[in-house]
Amino acid sequence: MFTIGMFSKINRITTKTLRHYDELGLLKPEYIDEFTGYRYYTTNQLMQLHRIITLKQMGLSLSDIKEILNNPRAIDLFLKLKEQDVLKSIEAEKAKLLQIRSYLSCIKGENPKMYTPIIKELPEVIVASMRQVVEGYDVFFDLVPNVMGKEMKRVGCECAVPEYCFNIYHDGEYKEKDIDVEICEAVTEMKEDTNILKFKKIDKVPAAICILHKGSYNKLGEAYAFAFNWIKDNNYEVVGDPRESFIDGIWNKESEEDWLTEIQVPIRMKVNE
Amino acid sequence: MFTIGMFSKINRITTKTLRHYDELGLLKPEYIDEFTGYRYYTTNQLMQLHRIITLKQMGLSLSDIKEILNNPRAIDLFLKLKEQDVLKSIEAEKAKLLQIRSYLSCIKGENPKMYTPIIKELPEVIVASMRQVVEGYDVFFDLVPNVMGKEMKRVGCECAVPEYCFNIYHDGEYKEKDIDVEICEAVTEMKEDTNILKFKKIDKVPAAICILHKGSYNKLGEAYAFAFNWIKDNNYEVVGDPRESFIDGIWNKESEEDWLTEIQVPIRMKVNE
DNA sequence: ATTGACTTTAACCTTAGGGGAAGGTATACA
DNA sequence: TGTATACCTTCCCCTAAGGTTAAAGTCAAT
Image (cartoon, rainbow over all chains, first blue to last red; front, side, top):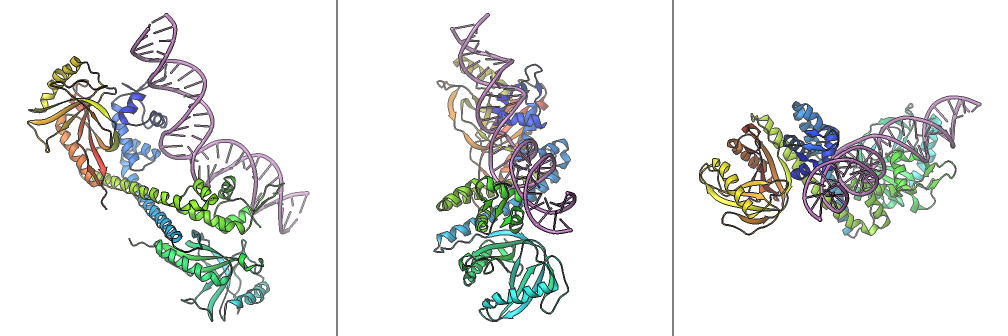
């Protein structure tokens, strides 16, 4: 018969933990004094405790362990599930590591501008889109409000809330002139296509790296470069057309310095090793 | 101006999280209505939120992130510490994985007897020890009480509590006869060495794999075999003499089936990779 | 004016115990 | 027999990062 303190010393485990296991019904003492409430353990509990600790070292939760103790045949199932969990968490930790190192190497370099890449999901969305080859970037300032905006109003379609307006560039490379661009605006419902506007539903993107760019559009190239480097460094690959989402611009901010744009590149973790 | 719901949709983050960050002083809304308490965000908060999410994706805690936001020069330090953390947790997850797989392969085999290996620390201890070459295992039943026990009583040394009595085998291999064994018993203080008893302090062992063996001693070999296999499978190496700790035996249990012995092998994670 | 969508605070929940307080108990010692 | 000390009990609050209701107040449209 050991008191809880002795038993804890023998097993290098705290009394608090033993009480906790008692409370959870995981490991009951051999005998509890009826009047004092003192817990008394014997070597009979040693085996059970070893079993609990083994399973805990494998990363199982106490409730899983309890189920296993009640139904030992389930251990296979639990361990196989846990194996997958552990594999996933190794991947997750490795991704963190890459991200940290990519950041550290970036601030070590002379690069003064730091971007803050985040991974998020892009929800399914219905868009009104207009694809065209335009002469240069300046054309947008006229094209979007005067052509696209008016046509949308004409066919009576409403912008979604929150507003979501983005460009997709269909040229494989960066161009200054004759840019093949698709301007998309999220709307509440599909309408009949017109000569100018095409409607389509764009599927949810499970993961996209998103980086915010503040300032005029002529520096967007740097942001793209950063994004693609980040994707390479962090072992991702591009799985869809990059979007350039307009948050603040000439329509609501006077100073170019306040313009805000988000680049969104659909990605997927590379599966190679 | 966005309400909290809008802002949460834009950023694919819950309102609860935004409120939480507000509470923590991590991300304050641009403006809070004095009378209704409504929070209103603007695009000014987007940058800050991106920064927070970036750091969170690297695994930093919100309190670390808060410190970084208050003192951006500290980011290097935090990230370097976090890098070490992440490396450690990758190692820990890999160890779990090995342990799970070792267990799974073991129950898949025909091995009916499952041991439950646990890793624990062995504390520093003062022992009275007696080293001898004995003819066979049976000798212990006489040797320990009648020679060692009596000598200990003669020199007046007290056993430690909890009791801790173990053997160390000094033969490199398993032997049935002429076994070079050191019998150790934890005591409360050092005494003068005698012809029979030698006193020494044994250092703490940071990690030992411990497995319980129930039953008579002639099956201990299997337990050892299991232990050494486990060590190999789980990428550990032996860094000290194995101990055989006697918990229940002939002195307190009549039936051999109830005898309980713990094998403790000092180990260290292998550093290769 | 009413409805429905949205917001507020507040309180409790999650893991695996840690820390401490208030009070009862066991045992050695005087 | 009394007491000092070590040990035990239950009870309550705490962790991190929010999730999940609930009650009540607010906004915008009908």
